Image 1 (cartoon, one colour):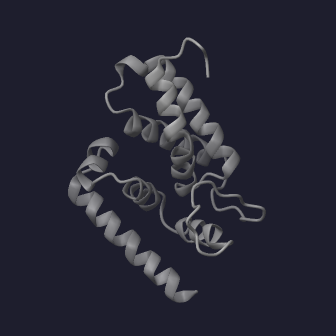
Image 2 (tube, rainbow, N blue to C red):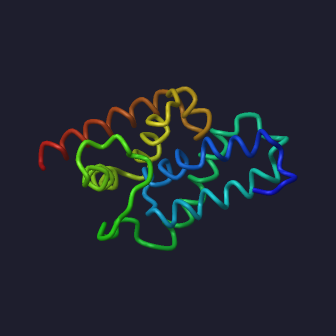
Length: 156
């Protein structure tokens, strides 16, 4: 980090880098893509720092948009061979993070995004405001995502 960076921004970077990489992976990016998207987003945040009111939400939205551009340039359902995951240190089994991400990638993109926001602690109202959806649509999408995940788990 630069010497002339505001202390608050440097602290935000230290606290939010890994959770943001994990968020990016939950919406479908591999580890390298997730790190690139987060680093690019932090570059954007450095420029806009004084104008951003809610940096955690702002960063997730920027990362989500960067992920969308990545998805348009490649097929997002690629094989998970050699897949590394950042942010699931609490997994009870060594290969559990890969299985979780594999299941998440079977959801629709919208379901993955809304669920990723929810996992990061955002309420349906906050997700709706950030994503430009209605609260009803967010809750419906969360219900559908959870139901699909339950079916996927039963199948496996």
